Every structure is written in structure tokens, then in C-alpha cells.
Length: 577
Image (spheres, rainbow, N blue to C red):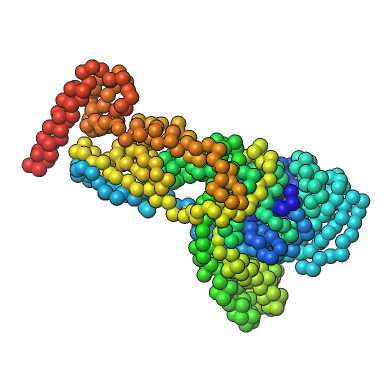
């Protein structure tokens, strides 16, 4: 428990970006606590860690939708952190650059397929306040940062800590208390955030914490309070080498279960299944390599024109000049304008979104009301909440040549151990661009659209996709979901290649071999479960080599195949006439 950083998720209501993974609108707390009778479900958590001298820097993305008075976020920290504001746009850029992509590249075609009327299916590719105290509770720091009010508490009594927080407007529910106790027992300070009285949920930005620590760590046990089942945890770590989990297994997925033809649209479920096979906990590596792979050009502070805001002399011009600072969040833009452009009394009933997004319509009313703007305060806010976060991000990436992106899904019952991370210089890079190669196996009964495809994955697994399934990767002769989801489960440390805990590679190669020996039957002929050949409209069957075959099947199948070919060519000649 020496090093830690609280994370959040971002798929429900709240989402911190400490070390866990994945995004959307968050409804959750998990480290976040709400005043409702039940905590809001937290569906994802995003966190970036980086070392800066002897300090650990943690960018945590928070996403929350709900009444601002209900927002409260609590996270254990190893030491009193220095706080600042982060950037939502940065997390969007980071996710886009490191999210795995899965493409199937058909390298060649063997045989000749029948003409198809359809085109060939081809997948696209502050200064710290003086400490005060109450019995058993010490207020180590108290400040305002961006849209938040914050406090850092330390004490040895759970009841007095929760009483202090509740009396000071921080929501702590009864079911949260058992999750806080282990951190209190370990003398860890607790950082709590709430929104300022004049701020709404749309003003929420990522929080940046700097604190003394040697290694990144996520207090995931606290997240369990409001986490949804199989919650996404997205983690990025900057450093000199590839980052690894030290007390969670590292998992390599079975790529034969990926829907390659559908660009890996089942990746999340496959990772979840693989983690379950690893005992409920583990991480996959989505990317490991040069930190320059993340283009920060769109986040260059020079892209933002503060001087244009400084020179704005009236509300409409001010709003126009400030718009570019909020391209990623209209809610933040409206909240910003509300603080600096008062709505004239006669227009008080107009919805904020309608008024502030259409200020030109109300320009005359604003002039008559002599509405002015506190330009100096506005510029200062933009500098602190928009410009400085991007400057700090640029510095971090310039100082660290290596970036690792890891991902997992965790359910509340699996959040019993806080994951800790380290670096290993001996491990290879990992590309986020994954490409499998394919060979289309043509014959006259298939068009290129529905012909079987032999696939070789980046990890070297080879198998054949059954025909007539261009939108679903169905392995011939096999039920793909019967295959293990994890190919390799290993324990990794700060050096070496790690210890193999489970390796399914040989088993997978043996089982997948069956898919490469199937026998194609003409498009209008199938076999019944008993092995009898019957005709249908236009289906195809793949005969398992392991199925019980009647004595006469060899000759009968051959005859049926020849008859099918004769029928096909007869149809073709009639069509030509």
C-alpha cells in the first residue's frame, strides 16, 4: 500500500483516469460517492501514470451526469497530493492512438469462385491551507482547483472521518465505509472532491494528482463500491520501458476467437472471458512502444488564441473567441459563458443551451442591458484549466520515451487486491495495429462473398472459417466459444520474460487443425445428422472429419458432388443463352 492512485471509470457517471480503463457517459461513483440511496454505477475508469522526478503524476478522468450537489469523489493517496486540472481531449486522443485495431487481409485466392452479383466482402481494414484538526481527524490540505473544492484528511477512526466529510458536504454512504477501512488502517490520507457551488456536472474535468510514490498503484478495492459487473479499466503508463502488472497476471488472448471479419467487435467480451479464466483478475497489453506514437499536435497550447479573448470587448465577440477552447465539450463551454456573461432579466426563462449557443440572436438585448465581461478573470481561468494542462501533458510525453496501454474488465467481487505496476526492459513492444492474413478457398459452389477463408493470426494460429458466414467468424468443425479465451496466462516481474502459468498454444493448434480438414459439399447438398445426403435450396455444409460416416458415403458424396457440378454448369449455359 506504499504507492497508490485512485482511478475511476468512464462509462456510467464518473470516470477517473488513474489506471483503469474505458469510456462513455458515466453513472458511477466507485471512489465517487453520491447522495442518492444507492451509489451511481461506475462503468469505466481511465488513468494515466507518469513519474516526474520523485513524484508520481496521475491523470484521472471523471465523467458524471447528475445533480451537481450529488457529486462527491473520494480516493486514498499515499501522500498529500498537489492538484491541478487535466484535459478530456487528451484522453480522447490517447484512447484513439492506442486502441487495438483488428483487420483481416485477404492475401490471395485459391481456386475459382462462381460469379457473384454482390461485391466481394472485404473488411475495412494551490497553496495548502494550514492543517487543522478535530478529534481523530487531521485536515492536511484544503483548496479549490478548477471546478472542485478539495480536502485531504487523515485519521484512525472511520466514524469521525465520515462524520467530518458528511458535515462538510461530501456524500459518504454507509456501504462505502467498509471499503475505506483498509486504507485508514494503513494510515493513508483520503482526498475528497466536490463541485463548487457555482459549478455544474458539465464543468467536471479530469483531475491531476502529484504525490510521492515509487510505483503506480490503483486502489481498486474502493472502486468496488459502485462498479458495474465487468467494469472497463483503461490504464496508460509513461516511462523508460514497458510497464507490467506485478501482482496481477498478464494475459494474451486467443486470437482465434476474435471476429476478424468484423474488426474484432467482440474484443471486450473476449478480454472479459480471458480474465475469468485467469481467476477474475489480469491485464492485457493494448500497446507498448514509442510515446511519440501518440500525436499531440491537436493538443498544442499554441493552437489556442488567448489574445483574441483578451481583446474581446463585448459578450458576443468574447463567446466567439472562447469557443475553440471547448470544442470537445459544449457543456463546459456553456458553463464557462454563464460565469462571465450574465443573462438579462427579461431573458431569464430561456434555457441556457439555447441562450449561450445563440448569443448573436440576443446581441441587442445584451447591449441594452449593458452586460459586460470580466475579461481578466476569464483569461486566467482559461489559462489554468485549458492551456496549462496541455503544457504539462506535452512535458510528460517529451520526458518519457515509452508508453504502455493496458486494459482489463473487473467485477466488484474481483476487486479484492489493488494492482501495482512496474517496468520491464526485457519485454518486446506491442503494436495496437493487429492484422491477420487470409486465403480465400474458392470452388464453383461458392461466390467470393461466402467462400471459406483460411486465417492466420498475428500470434501464428491457423484455422479455417466456415463458408456462408461473411458476417460471423464461425470456425469450421468447431464451436469457437468452446475454445479457451486466454492463450497464455503469465506472471511478469521487473526483468525477464515472465513465468508461464498456463499456455494453451499447443492445445489450440491441435483443435484448430480440424477446421483445416473439412470437406466442402456443393451449395445445394447437405448431410443429415445420420450422414444421409439431402438437397436444399442454397445452403452449404462442412462435413466434420470426426463424424461417423456411412460405408457408402465416399462414393455417394463424390457422385453428389459431380451431379452438383453438372447442374451448375447447365444453369450457367442456360443463363448465357
